Length: 461
Image: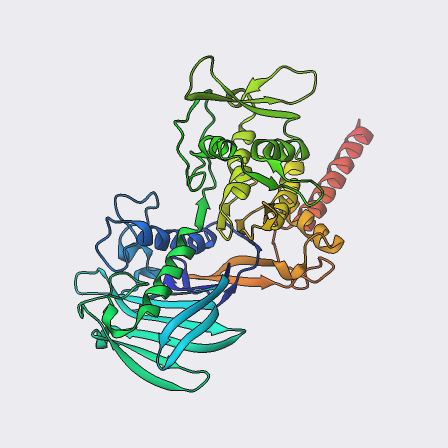
């Protein structure tokens, strides 16, 4: 699970400062202040990790990516080439990691890793890795740091902090550059297998990050499925039906709510559609005798006839990918959801908070899934329901992180909202959801003035 995220010199952000991430993190804010770019860099790093097309050690844009960040100068803050693009990511490991042959120690046990990277523009205005560092911790104590700098490209510096401090170097096979922003070409003959183990952990955490865009794919009357197993519903929900069918074919059963037993996947999705007031019944049906064509069928009332997704309101097509992604993702995944409330009625927006809380608590085969969810939202109804559930003890305030993004001149700013065990926010930002009281007062004054004008007109007559 990601526990901290920090960005410097990227798009709207000169420096975000450390952003604490909880099992459920919600980011509010005005338009065009950098909310989405917080997740965009993480998404780009994931693509850089899994893509075989990228030749640079840190490549954030290429033809294979669904995320177009533009050129290096376009995604640097204010186009500033003189300052490095830097980021820091910290995550808690699902299981204790044993690192072998660290200095004179047989093994080092770790439960938390932190990766710090900076890159600067070279003479051709391409990203060049400047520094990279892993910090290994256990029980809140830093025990090992492994560092690379571009000025000493042929070695890694290993600094052991506990139990006995010492420092030594590891030679790199290729002095030109690291293979990737998170991985070095270390000679396996030098007893440095723990370096590769750190890179493998970074790969796992990036591969487990999935983003869902604010505008999801439009509904279709028929969907094709030939047995594929997507890793997610896709950036726009284009694989939602494939994910549903794959989960059903694999007989996946989850606890979709704490007061429910584990259910088959499609039944669990139907349960939440009913809870949200969207559909009383939901099913996936093959089209006639076809083995690869399917329809999503809904009933909005017990006495109405079934209709397919294309004949439902557009909001359902926007909701379904969010719902499926929340429960389909593999355990220990991190989901970044942009405006899951898009095109939804206020009552459903509030219900989304309940559904996402349930997703962070869900169990599969009796085991906690530990899926982490980060939400970008503009919904007051979502926040009100979340605050209520904190007050009711459904979710601990310690498992929720709330932020508000705003702008000061050219700088984007992110402020942590302090929420207590009763769901109260101590530092409520000005204009979090607009200026409601000003609108109410102005409406009352306008109504009073018009009444007086009407009365005066009647007296004159």
